[in-house]
Image 1 (tube, rainbow, N blue to C red):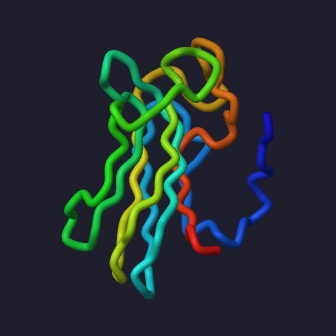
Image 2: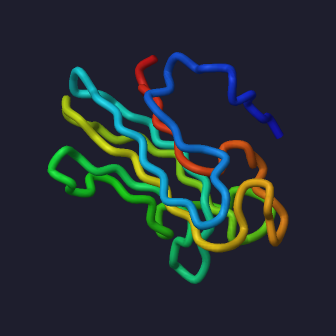
Length: 131
């Protein structure tokens, strides 16, 4: 597995919430200056068609414009409940809030089954897909 060093700032990264522990409710504000192709890479916990650790994006009106759902995820390696999404969406120019929420177990550095293949990216990262 390839683990990125968290201190290596990838110039394509718009914002990220990663290495998330138990019982987290994290947000990160970001602004887009133009219509942008955004690549979303997220790893979380889900099983039985439900997500327990997952992320979403809200616009300035607090409307959810993207959410990590079980149906869009695939196995992220390790335990079966490790789920990942790697997709690209278009977001209009504007202000947004990135969210990531986790439940009370199975999270970064406190796994209760085998960790995913890319454990340091547990959480959500947004990239400018054109950079």
